[in-house]
Length: 503
View 1 (spheres, helix red, strand yellow):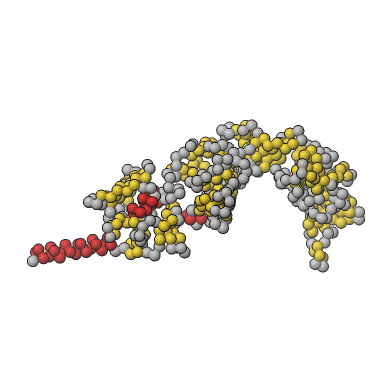
View 2 (cartoon, helix red, strand yellow; view 1 turned 45 degrees about the vertical axis):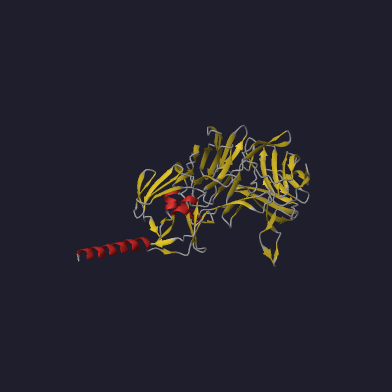
């Protein structure tokens, strides 16, 4: 009788063990690795609300060596510098020599070891993305080699630390931060290996090592607004900036461009009162487009000069084009811009230099022209590039589409992608888009900023080099200026950071 009870109890124990191990149910989701189906006929299972996947096909696809002791049920894994030990049925584990506790243990299901799919993230750093509509669980391995996550001594606009995720070869070289959270720097490469950072009423020049060479705080002046009212002998023009008001009368204003009506009478726009595009130089002279051409009038109303066009290398630049913009180039020169090109003119309105290109720089007090992270200077009547980044200003065969939240490198035909990098779902779920600013250096490395300022960098083969996690609370992109094959500057609002990448 005693032996019978022993057999009965043994059977009950065996049934309970089997039920605890095998009470997992297949789920109608497929598992992919970087978008490709996992190479196995074994289906994922769900137990206690946890998704389990066959361990060997998943981890071996992630280039991880796995050994299983069938007697002790101990599992040993190694990938690069990462090592871990697991035991079937146990939540106790080891990761890189340290004890950890799992939320759910590995299971043995029909002779195969299954593990919670989240272990690919915890043990290796792979990203797990569940796409409900496609009934797919995707394991992203592209960031798996970025084994170091480093908090930088710089905060984002939410006062949270900016972090750098990299494989061990990227470091913060130097940085500075404006005390005002409202500051917005734009960076340029200046002459003689200098960097120029322009903000709201602030300019800082440094060398490539971050040493400050020049610093200036200035009062940013507001712009004049211009209105024209029909008068007895033409248009009367009023220019106003704060309490500063100037008036001219009898101007034969050109109405074909650079004017906008302010009200409508009987369904037709009225030209009695107009908003116009014009300018005032350092001497208080009005620069305005008339029926004769672009003209200058002194404060007393005398016409000083008028020009219909300027000669360029490719022909002429007409003064009558839309998009007129007038600014001071120097004490005796003006910078004239419209949709057809630009001209630098002297005190008589004659062109010192003119071109049929779009070029709308910020002009400094030392006559340096800053545009698209580069610097230019007028030398012997020619526009000369005096400072440029380690980039030709193009994006090569890289394509970024906002609706796809992806970065693609296309083949030479431009029709077939060589590889596609998709924005991580975790980042996308925060409301950020990958389509913001794309820069490609001369080595073909791509830097792309999200609308939250986070920067992803990939090489030509599509390998992720690093991620600079900014995650601002407000929409903003980070400006990237490559300085060399190993150095780049990242500018996020009031933060200026320089990084070095060792090969």
